[in-house]
Amino acid sequence: MTDEDDIEISPQSWEYRLVAAVVYAVEQRVGGGAGGPRTRWNGEVLAETDPDDVGGAFSDGSISVSVRHVFDRLREARDLDRPLTDYEAWLVRDAMDTLTHEAAHLMAPLRDETAPETYPYDSAATAFDEGRTEHWTKRNLDNVISDVFRDAGLDHVEDAVLAQPNLDTLPAYTPATRHLDQALAERSGLTSAEVTQKLLCADDGQRWNVAVDLVIDKHLAEPGLMPEAHRAEVRRQLVAPLRDALSGLEAVQADESLGSEQKSDEATTAAQNAVAGLDTELQRIERKYRIENAQRVQPESQRPESRLNQAVRHAQENLSPDLERLRALSDPQAPAAGAPKRRAGVTDHAPSRPDDGSRGQEATRPRPGPHAPGLG
Image 1 (tube, rainbow, N blue to C red):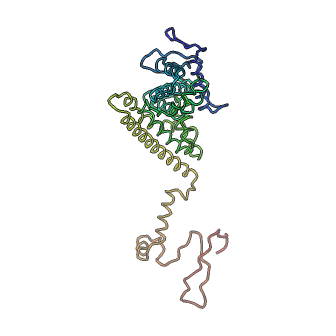
Image 2: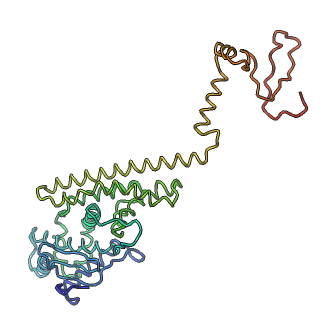
Image 3: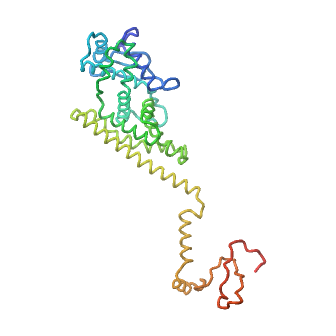
């Protein structure tokens, strides 16, 4: 729904049809066809009135676009009867970048503030969202351009526009999310493109949970280590280092004293810290569950405390002759050195050999087993 001051672009205009084509192309590229995620675009295209902004996507599903920085550049390229200069081609690419970026934002469902385990849209969430949207845009921009230029009458400038390099306008965000998505892919068995798509299409308030669920499922849930009832608490423990590491990037992005390379370095460092924190927590949690599960299924005789008692008994039964004699002197109940060791309730019945009196004290060790009552 538009405000009174909003200027709506007519649905019959060329500009409107171009935006609709980009939105549809992004939906197809992200959603992958029938059954996949769908855009929440409400069909409204507004003229961006803030001279400092080139476009935006809003909670009501509308999209705003700068006439000067986007529509005018694209219209001029359409009508030009000569080849574009490199700079003109780059301006057209930048205009398409804006449309694609805002259309990608509309692939996320509307934020549900009432859902359990919802996180605020704070500085860390901004980096996690904007960086990923920019990352997806840069990865897919060439395909979107090819999808829409012919029908928009821009096919004669397509090659020149595709030849231009990308310019990352969010250097404090994009490298961080790119690095994080790759790390999540390595820890979940998915590709980085699959991780990026899942998180791009996640509710802003649940995106952190969706991210760590990829790791939880692979390392804790599928192996049967973690009870499902523990998921919410484990999520909180794994999300915490991610949010903490990315929380300072909004200030880095806004710092005009830093160049793009410096901002990119800060983003990479933040992502590395986030991954290190995630790994530390995951290893701690996984170790805890493995120990607890082993203790539940381990026989009493194999538990650490039982093995300790067994070791003590084994040592007592294998004393050296000197220690055995010392034990006999200090403990009247202890058997004399050299005496055969008998289990309680077991009697040796084997007779001494009649032909070897010197071995009359030696007896055959009885086989373990129940002692029949009445015998002996």
